[in-house]
Length: 172
Picture 1 (tube, rainbow, N blue to C red):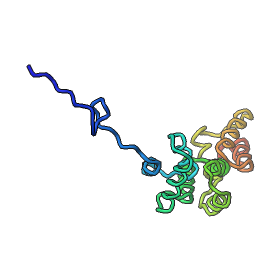
Picture 2 (picture 1 turned 90 degrees about the vertical axis):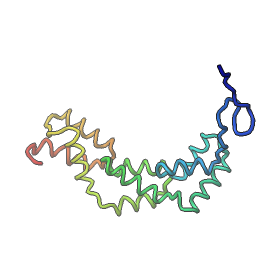
Picture 3 (picture 1 turned 90 degrees about the horizontal axis):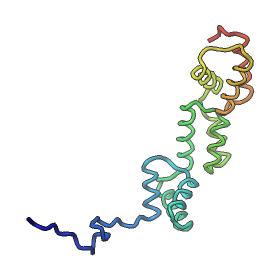
Picture 4 (picture 1 turned 60 degrees about the vertical axis):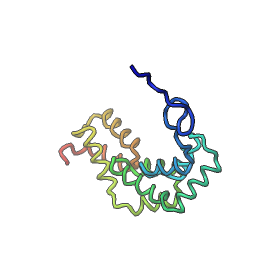
């Protein structure tokens, strides 16, 4: 019977017989994150900071990625905007999320104003999808109004849709 040889610790191993991993830089980590999905500058810097990278190294890496075209806040904002509209969120909710990601107000305003989205129709579809048929019950109408407000639709839109339920239940 042969005895099993243990690999000697040394070059190429970490002492446990496994190959040692190369040390990742902030740039490598950020590039890996961007390969999965778009990220804002602020989001990348936060993730790198939580990953143990210094603020200077993180800033340099994010700046380099921006210069190379791998990271772009405008592209990130447009992507997030399309995604959230597709999920049925209203302009107020989308605006708040974009601002929390460090997107400038001018960019957010431009995205929302130039969007070819019928917010009233989107809100009506969300209401129909969630609750089905209209209701004349005041408590139920209040519940539905709160749902639409949480999703980021304007109060005027919500008022029209929830009162339309009570006034004309046969309207589709």
